[in-house]
Image (cartoon, rainbow, N blue to C red; front, side, top):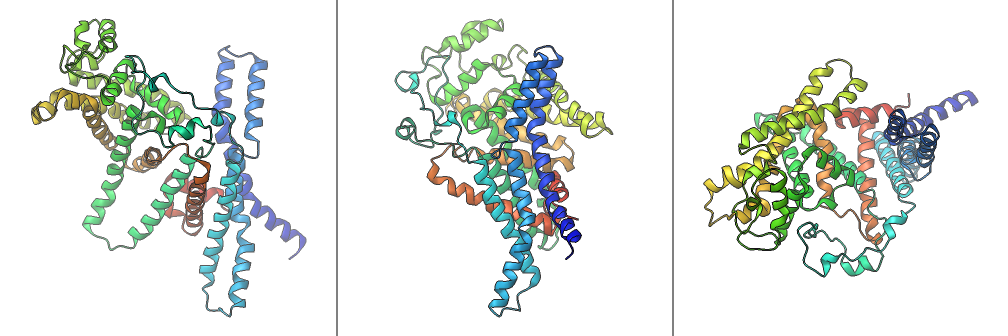
Length: 479
């Protein structure tokens, strides 16, 4: 091999590494840089302050334990290590007189091994430095020693993944900060493997029905899981995701607290628990008699209060929620559509906004249907009491109904939405923080999952579906 051809080969192999690093840098810094630019444009930051913020953002992103370096290590290592590993496997097979080994199988094995090793290194890189805030002693809440008051957050049921003694002993580490990334890789790896098996099954009418309905069913399940966690176990969701759901839902905090207290057992119908002021203040603000918010006097709390000033009609409230949700989504989607896709901007924005608007409206309407409109007519109040509806069943009804909003969205987008929400739903089943001796489980899960995805996208780009598949195919090209 001449010097020129060797240099060309090195450049060709380095291309995925550089591309991955640049894309990782853009994805991790662009939101912060745009926000800084907007604050400067609005006059909330001086030019010097904006410059310092931008420099600080870039400096943090360029650190070796940040996302850009992670992307470069994962993708670059997967391509650079293939040739030496392929040579190693070939040498081993020849040394053992196993010339019958399939060369294609050895090539696939080399790709998988390269991706696996790279994923192990990338995961270690991203978890190398613990955050100082994660090692701070967990404070003892006053809720541990006295009964929560009407404006206190009740403790989450079953939310402690590490016992209190260990928490207060200050041994909970940074372990778990990459859980969302690991679950994303695991979900996509499962999709690849299941799709491969599914494609080999004979075509039939039942297979077509299952293929069309599965994304909708999984989305409904994922949406219900996420919304239920938002109500009762918000610590199981990322903080930014909690904030986004709260902004979209526009639910009065006092009503949310009431539902949580009802589930916890400190807000009970027919008993004066000292919590009348929680919804009483809300009734006062919306021009309603304060006794409507007293659980000792009013059973059940009327939907009019749940509607938060929109009147007694549940259908009218659902329509109002749809319109508000549509406007909220349109403000979010329109700029993205203008940047990414200039054609059909209005149609795409309208439909995507209608999806989110329907999601919000169906959730609220599901709550009303469960607690007052439909639930009490199906089940006797002696069998399913108002306390049972308001301590969780009405929220469950809304959670189950809101997922059907996916049918409003275009079929080609349903899969992408599913891949967005499914890992977040799965995250509610696992602890967001855990003891460091268990980190190896996440480490191996991520490495195997990433290796499956990266190997598959090189062997058959179509098997990794959606935007991620297209992105990885482009990034990992070495031609």
